[in-house]
Image 1 (tube, rainbow, N blue to C red):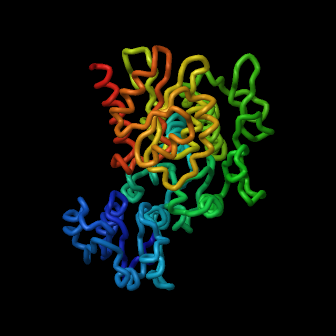
Image 2 (cartoon, one colour):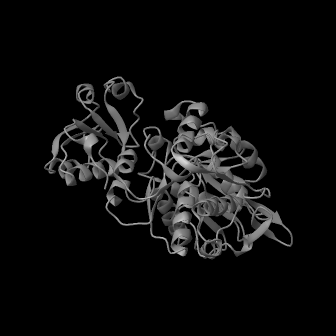
Image 3 (tube, rainbow, N blue to C red):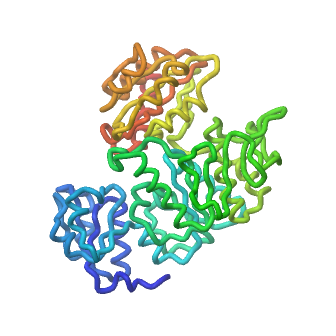
Amino acid sequence: MKELDFLQDKRITILGLGATGMSCARYLERQQIPFAVMDSRSCVPAFAEVNALEQCQGVHLGGWDSDVIASSDVIIASPGVDVQQPQIHDAVAASAELIGDVELFIRVNNKPVVALTGSNGKSTVVSLIAHLAKACNINSILAGNIGVPVLDTVDDSADIVILELSSFQLEIMSSMRAEVGGILNICDDHLDRHKTMTNYQAIKQRIYGMSKSFVFNREDVLTYPENAKAQAISFGLQQGKTGHFGLVTTDKTYISFGDQSLIAADELPVAGQHNLLNCMAALAYGQLLGWPMAQMLAGLKTFSGLEHRCQRIESSDGVAWVNDSKATNVGATLAAIDGLAPTTNKLVLIAGGDGKGADFSPLEAALNDRVDTLITLGQDRHALANLKANTSVVDSMMEAVRVAKSEAQPGDMVLLSPACASIDMYPNYMARGEDFRRCIEEVLND
């Protein structure tokens, strides 16, 4: 464990008392380092737990106390806290450090790290990298913007730490020196917080400045690293040059490395072009880390994907019901439509929720060319409905599923791929996906 001198004898304040904030509090408690906690909510479930910790010097609820922030030497912000809002940004002293839980982890961690970001597919690809690590007999920890908070893993043994990083986490990171860092893609997302695509891209690009070698998507110029001298491997749907991943088609489609065909697309348990890109990205990480290709390819054949990401729901009506609740932005929904839309049968799409200030117009062509029936719900249901004539606008998931059932025949697909966050109707996208599953079961059993 690295030294904790930078926290000693400092006034420390944790912003946000969700899962991440509590992991920070537990970590500081274990290290016997005093801290205070602040949350904008007036009532938080973890209040009693954090207040009972010996090192907790106070819990401030109901807003951001500028005086407490101004007097803090180290401020540890949870990803869900917008550190640019004036109550926080304007109060932070010039001499203070504003960091997140991942930055704190990086400073005390002594294990090798790889890191990945992007607008879509992050969770799938980091999970796939961890799956390939296991296939190569490498003990890994998967953390960051997925699974358990990263500070809860700091004492775990592992050969490597695989970090999924959101823009919110990258925004307040500076010390990471990842063995490999990469960006899968960049599309319109979180502009309610980051305001412009230029700012959003700049935050994502921070990962390259904190990595030794790079993985990028050569079909997305926004992911290109500026440092051309660093070792880098790209991936894309076209055949790659020597040392890069792509696709080649002969008798069938294969993932290739340069001109070498590696594995046929039909050998993979996951379907769709977006999943081929995900597989290539994961292989690029393994290649840069020196993992054996044969073992990685064997691992690809046993990876079945993530819950709530293009996940088939078993049903008895002959309709393909697909839960893609994790598609919380436009790019993710476009990828699902492109990768899963039936070539001959009907596609019924359920979309909507909190659009986070996104521009929905890039969906318009796909909705009119490839979606037969559109059903919208949630806060931004009318904005989405305006993109396609004869859209069904509904008030609940149950109503959406009932309409979908009335439209779909055996062989058709009903796809929940919202292009929006779930927070207007659900605690998270997982709860939305589970409600979709529950509604299907109820409707089919009517």
